[in-house]
Length: 353
Image 1: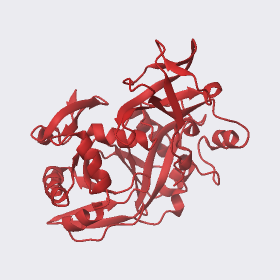
Image 2: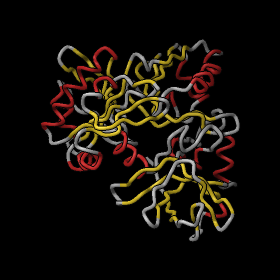
Image 3: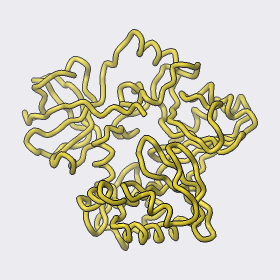
């Protein structure tokens, strides 16, 4: 298991570590996950998201190439503006979801929620090759830190010269001698900072102190996962993989139905004529029994679905999971785990930003 970019720094601060995507990540810091979760709602939390993948697209015809491949209208993006986007297979399956930003006429950047996968890079490079576009994994060059909570903007402004950006806008923040690009991600709220790798350790320390002055604190994996699962955001490789359609995993808001791109005909037909044969749901333990990733859910003796990621929900004060449920059981009230332990399903929040 390898560490993320700030793992050595976190060893002095974290109360526990956890594993995801083969990486060692801080599970919680000294105040504990409950206090971290509360800080995001009441003041501000500082998130280390340096594990997230960064992919750059460069070339004279990059906007035209991306418009044929990704789900969002790339050419209409103005410089230093972003949008929700994704790439589908020819069969309409979701290969990758990301925020897509236009840095300049010949430079776009995709920010993933998880580490970059080689199969995703291969899919993008296959289309880029025909247009003489460079697709570069820039994860080692930039890392993502995030500020979330009602005092996030004030912390960002205290960090350096520059105003907090609007939703899906890019802004420059000058922190000492370091210039940092900052974006406001409409999907997740708060602000994401794209930090040059050489400046990551120093900026983390400076932001940690500013967050503490604002009554907030760093946020570890346990509290961050609770926030993600409560808001119904599926995690690639853990809740779903490349065999799922966007509508099945609560990602339909990334799709455009007004242009042609790879896989668009399939998802358009699903929207007009079809329906999802399975769908992401919230799943609660009825008796506060721990929910575990990969466990099957049953209706009588028939498998109705499977649990993906799970957490202790601080908002609901009980175990919560994301689960993929088969269509015939969408409205079932008698679901249970193996052994008969009852569970309850509920719709996940919509994401129509």
